[in-house]
Length: 60
Image 1 (cartoon, rainbow, N blue to C red):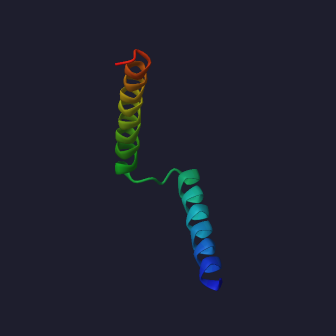
Image 2 (image 1 turned 135 degrees about the vertical axis):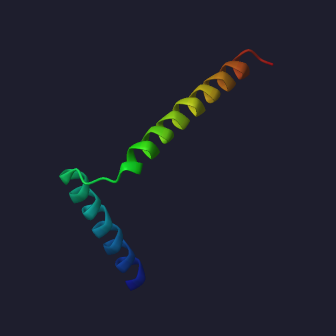
Image 3 (image 1 turned 120 degrees about the horizontal axis):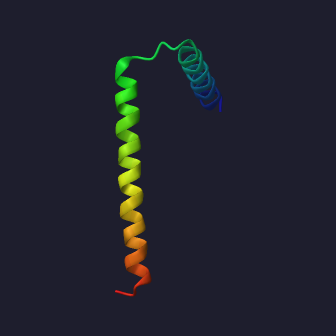
C-alpha cells in the first residue's frame, strides 16, 4: 500500500512541475511538434472511425 502512495505522490509532483513549467512558458521546442502530430493523428483516426461507422450503417 505504501508503494502505491509513493507512486501517487511522484505523479502528483510531476504534474505540478509540468504545470509550473508550462505556466512559465519554458516548454522545449519539440513539444509543439509532438502536440501537432498527435492532433493530426487524432483527426485522421476520427475520420477513419466515422467512415467505418457509415459503412456499418449501410449494412455491408
